[in-house]
Length: 146
Image (cartoon, helix red, strand yellow):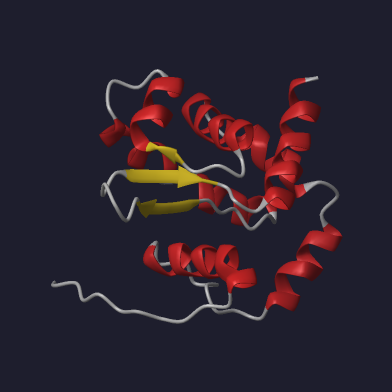
């Protein structure tokens, strides 16, 4: 299958939301364009979905999201992420992320991170620019590790 570059104007205050929806769509998530009120209702029913999600993560997933929390809102290179996680190369990041979104769905938490290539260097970049989300999972990490 060939890929096609598409340019879409996105309001600057909704860029993090756009990346979340797009990443979910790329991963084949069924709820990418679902009614937001359903997930809100589920979150209201769940006592602490972020903490439950954090506890479901394996060590590598926790390491990845730990880097994202600690560097938010800054985007960091794949090389830096791999180094901080103790991975042999940045090519090992993808397999670490394969289940984290699904685990979030199961816990009642919409999980996201940003991925893009630096427009000048083409270097892969990762991050959580949405500081509210980063703070939510930071608190979940702290509560789970207390």
